[in-house]
Structures are given as structure tokens and as C-alpha cells.
Figure 1 (cartoon, helix red, strand yellow):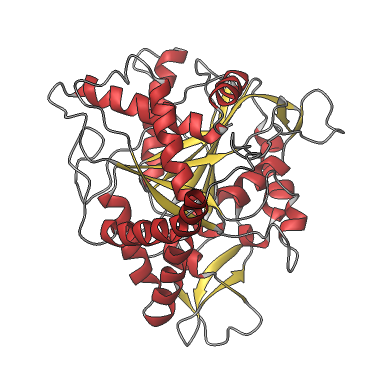
Figure 2: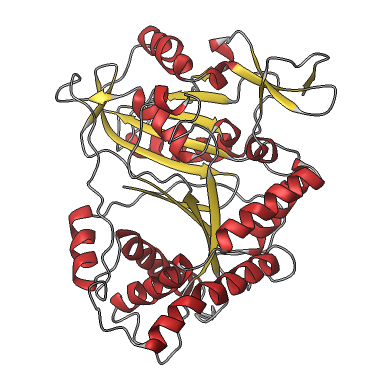
Amino acid sequence: MELIKEDDGLEPVSPSGQYLNSKVMSVSILGILELEIPIDDSQAMSFFRDIFVPINPRFSSIMVTGEKGARKWKKVRVNMENHVHVPSFSSPKGSSSPSENDSFLKSYISQIAMQPFPQGQPLWEIHMIKCPTSEAQETLIFKLHHALGDGYSLVAALLSCLQRADDPSLPVTFPSVKKFSSANKDDRNIGLRKVVSRCFSPLVNTVRDFGWSLLKSTCVKDDLSPIRSGSESLQPFSVSTITFSLDQIKEIKSRLRVTVNDVILGVIFLVTRLYMQRVSTNSNLSTNSTALVLLNTRNLRDYKPVRDMVRPNSESPWGNHFAFLHVPIPKVKPSDSQFSDPLKFVHKTHEVIKRKRSSFGVILTGKLLEIMQKCRNAEAVAKHISRTARNSSMGISNVIGPIDKLSLANHPLKGVYFTAAGIPWVFNHR
């Protein structure tokens, strides 16, 4: 990393940006865009240079270290040839089929996901896969370092580059999100026992969640299982996608009186246990397995224009504004009928999330990281987070996508997917 003598006037790197780009951990976000029509190289380069890079100054900045050890963002000239990659491959038979290209794409994503960024240039790359797959005529892969911003920021940046395919002059629309209404919200006949319980429950849940978070970050590890190998090194990375109907999820949500996220988490946990059972017949379905669920700490329900995010004192600031909480994956006993009644997984997940909503454990964990950053350094925080992730079995994050069909430079998109690389993630995109 470049050292500078004078760092006055340079934008400081946030604490989270420093520990996300350290010797201990390096996390990236991949945005995968599937084009229905191939895009011309010159048109694509013009799009990347004139539309994508100017979105945020960090896309044309590198991390430098000042005399006192503080990291700053330094503006540099972007050499597009260093950031845009067009891999070539050939089949032994000459031309390759879309199914063969699918295998190549999967291997290529696994390869670039594990590669570190060169530190002497801005922390992003674009890979143009100019061969037809079973899903697209061309695939663009945006690899963006997490130090640039969190999923909310980087997804918002990519979406700001896209337009509605039906009418580019219209704004992109997102699914409506309503606050969850409890079944007991209008119950005025609350007894004294319930009042006392509601007063003390947050305190008890906070102590329990914060204490458990400390243990998971130090000495308590999940059991070894098909979803946790216990290896200290990063394992091969693979991207898989599955699509559910949001209308069906909302229908389940309304009938069970839970939230959309409760339903999605319940489904993820159910299929995870099914996978564990299928991969290993000896797998104990009551193993201790934990998911790290990342939360956007902004009090927002949709995306804001990037120009608003980079303004001082913005209500939706650019950067890394997230926290994580530990959610145990529900266990299944041999005598349980949860596999025959999947809705029980949703109910069980709802109960756990509801309890954690009344806890301030996430806030205390964030404060702990701040104190650790000030008293020690970014590398200590990175070690803490890395150890927490390795002691858990999986990570889950969530982004809300638009409901409109999108296009990039008048080239319709068949699909847009996001995932994180550096930790095993389930990245929920809706």
C-alpha cells in the first residue's frame, strides 16, 4: 500500500473500510448481469468510463497510508485496461455449446472471486464474458471491494447505471414493503405479568445475545458438518441461483402473520438442513449450526440516488453501515415432523428473530468493534470478524431488487444477481 507524507485534504477511510481490506480479510461483492443481446466492446468501455466510474469518487481512488498510519482515499487516474477483463477460452472441439460455457463461467467466477485486488489501483474490476450461456448471450461481472461500500451502497451504484427496459425515462420501481403488524398490536387488555415481561425481556435478550456473540467470536464453534468444514483457508467459491415468487412469499407471510424475511430465512434454513441430510446420511440434523445475518443499519426501505448518498449528513449515507447477528439454524430431531411440515421452520425462525428484535446485542457488538478499532487497530477487528465467521456455518445477506425489467445502455437484461465473496454467503436478492 502506498505511503504518503502529507495526507491533508484526503478523505479518510472508514474504520469498517480498513478492516475489510486488511491482511486478515478481504471481502468483495459480485454483481452478475445477464444480457439478452451482446454489447459492443467500444460501447461497453464508454459506459464503464463515462457512467460507472463517475458514480462515486472511490471508484477512482486508491487506499494510501499517512505518516501516522491513518488510511486515506487518494484520487488517481483510472486506466480502464487494468480494470476491464475479457477472458477467452476455447473448446477442444472448436466452438463450445452454451452448457459448456456454463461450466466455464462457473469456474471463472470461482477463480476471480478468490483472487485479491491489486492495491496500487482502485478496488474494482469488470469481467466481460462474451460467450453465450444457457441464461444469457453475454455476462458482465462487476467485482467491487467491500471497502468501497456495503451491499446497499454498491447495489445502489449499479442500479443507478441501469434503466427500465420499457421506458428509460421512468424511474425504477421496487416492491412495496409494509411494516409487520403483530397479531396482538391492538390488544388493550395486557396483564401485569406481560407488562413486566416486556420491560425485562429486552434486558435479558441483550445480555444473552451479546454474551453469545462474544463466545462465538472467541471459543465457541459450530459443529463440523456438510456446511462447515472447519478449514482455516478459503474454500472454492461457487455461485448458484434459485428463484421464488415474491407473491407466494407474501401470501405465506400474510397467512402466518410473520415478515417476508422470516419466510425467506425459514426456507433457507429448511433447505440447508435438507442439504445436510442428503449430502451426508451420517449428518446429525441436531448439530449446532449458526448463520451470521447481516443487517443494514440505515432506517430506509428502498434505494436512494447515489448523489443523495454522498451528500454530507445524508439520511442514507454511502459507505459500510451494517451489523450482524447470530441466528441458530433450527434443529431437527428424528421424531420431528418439520420436514413434512415446512411451515414449522418458518414459525421457529420467526420466534428467534422476534426475540432478537427486542435485543440491543447488535448495537453493543458494533460498539465493541469501535472500541477495538480505537484501542488496537483495524487488523484486530478484522481478526475478530474473521474468527466469528469461521466459527459459524454460513452467512446470509439480503438486498431488495427492482420489479422492472432493466437494461444497460439499451441492452435488455435477463437477470441481475449479487453475491459476496470472501466468506461463505447466502445472498438473498428480491
